[in-house]
Image 1 (cartoon, rainbow, N blue to C red):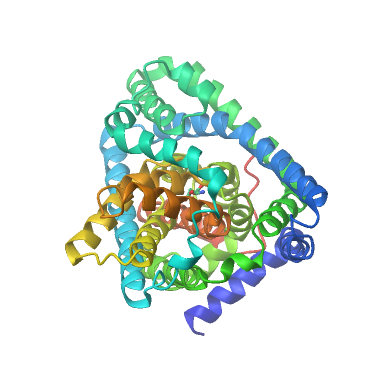
Image 2: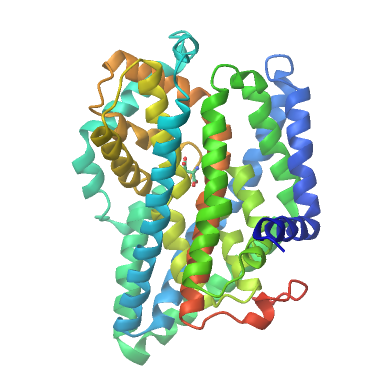
Length: 440
Ligand code: ASP
């Protein structure tokens, strides 16, 4: 059986198990089309309210989950050599996946030329209300790169915690967990404390998933109803390029990675993480999806040691879907304004997209904000930059839902490869889609 057929069957099996979330997603699309925001503002408000409650509920467990997962992951890996080995592997696999993503994005941008003729749609009025906010944000991003870098090390970890700044939190927790693993038996009370926190947050995640179907329904309906299908006019090619690019990641790049570097069956992995992928699509947030990504991978037999180390770091620091979309967005804007970029400039854009995507938080719309870093110095006037950027901003949500699904899937792919290499997958469980491990 061809690999694409296997993928399809796996996804269908995953959907069969999670049919209610899938039904929510489809119904959301239908209701979003039937109740456009401009005609039914009240219905739209209800969608947004229910969706936001769902996102808030899952975000509530993210910080305790990330902290406890990293502490357990690193302290269970224990020795330095193994930790360094896993760290190097993560960097290696993520680099391949992200470089592939930006290359595909750049090639599609160059060959499909999605921006040509789109200028008339980039109407200065279209995003007028956004422009003030956007120019402030862009100035912030561009002039404060040094500050962004400095902000990665938290002066006060509790401040970072209270602000929900994931990257500084992770940097602190990784250092703290390595230190814990170095102090011997005396670390037991603290590690046990975090083990309890981890188990409890996973339990809460299980409960929250009962809300997933209505939550995803409302989120999807809310996005579609506010942007409407009409946004596809004029920028249809841009969306098409994103869809084709992401499909290449799903159907070619991830499978090739799994086949080349591991014994993991692509179809089984995709089947295992369908639920997380649907939640990623609905929430457009890889951080909010993280509890689900961990649950899906652990339930199918990928060891907790690997999941709790790789997935939180991956969900925060590596975003291949975002990097691809940023590359395409920049090419779209320059083409729309008739600016020809040299090959070297395109390579530069792709490189900056990798940097920008990894500094971006796993929350909705973050990828578009960090794009300001990439837009700098590519020949657009400040006016064009702000107008073009506001335009992208106005239609970003749907693109965001798609790229977040890729961001989450690539995390599971990298975790599965590393787990396979380290003999940390229970294949009996992994290959038998009907049994699930109880993780708590
Ligand atoms: N929403 C994306 C994520 O959470 C980030 C982005 O591209 O905006 O992965």
